[in-house]
Structure formats: C-alpha cells, structure tokens
Amino acid sequence: MSEKPIEIPQHQDDPQWIMIWPIDELLPLVIGLCFGLLIGQVFICTAIGFVISRFYKKAKSSHHNGFVLHWLYGHGLLWTKNRTLKNTYNRKFIPR
Image (cartoon, rainbow, N blue to C red):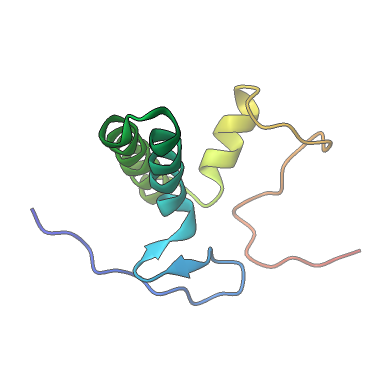
C-alpha cells in the first residue's frame, strides 16, 4: 500500500507541525500518553490515542477543509457562541 508523500504547509492558516506530524493529528496521541501516565495504563491509552489519531487523519484527508469541525457542530459536540460556521469552501476571507 503506497501512501502519499507528506505535505508541508503552504498557507498561514494551515495547522502547526511538530517534526513530521501536524499538531492536530499528534494531539490525541500525546493526550492518551499523558492520561495513561496518570492512571498507570500507558500502553492502552496511547494505543487508543493512536487509533483516534488515525481515524481523524482519514476523515480529514477524505473530506473538505473544516469537515471535522462541521461534524462536531452538527452532533452538538462543538460549543461555540456563533450560530453558524465559516464556509470552508471559500479560501479568501474578506473582513467587513
């Protein structure tokens, strides 16, 4: 199975990178590791974080930008004061 090469961010609004991982894909793994250290189940929590990170990476790569935020908002898991989210198909933002 051949994987696509790693894409280096080209725009200012792209997520930050740590080494070769985008921070939004690395965060579940790190949280699982830290939580595992606290409860004494490092391997299990890190494995769960890894699985969550893989699912997130697949969802992010197979859908449009901002899909995960819209999915979370639609299922009531994203708390925001706004009534709508930004249209993710627009690449230019013009302030009023």
